[in-house]
Image (cartoon, rainbow, N blue to C red; front, side, top):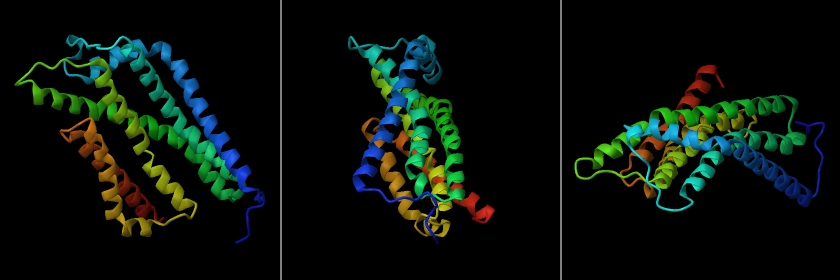
Length: 242
């Protein structure tokens, strides 16, 4: 097959320079979104606290460091930046690769930009409305029989935001699989033949959460989510004949 019409050879240094520039644009977009969201983070933190923690309205967060609230605000704003940065990364990677893509491949890639944003938002909502309330309820029930839990603002939000940000990325799995298959990088059959390797990799990645959740409940939920997304995408591709 001939090369795409706009395909041009360029020195390696130019490719590296452009790649760094595009990554810089993604970081700048994430920073800009974080700055825009920062002023509304205080009421957002209160709402998140009251929703996720069982009886959260009656539980006052503990602040143990002078800048703990501000740092938490920055982290909450950064989550919004991450959600927008993911589709921005997909778009910038498209622009970087565009000269080497065929016309139909460009359509696939461009369509993946809004899809990435939707998946990011779905991942965050899944974490916030389903995973985290169950997880925090479990944590509370695990310790209440023996002690009163004094939730620290910073530590609690470290867990909340890490899970939400992680699942925003995890929910990109269907997009990456479909994009890789449509661009001819891999095939559904190849992925299916190595599914156990992927399951093992998912479990290994998910259990990095053990550092912040020694009970293992969060790693298990994340690992199951990754496997379901992987297998669900393959099942959809099999059903559509791709």
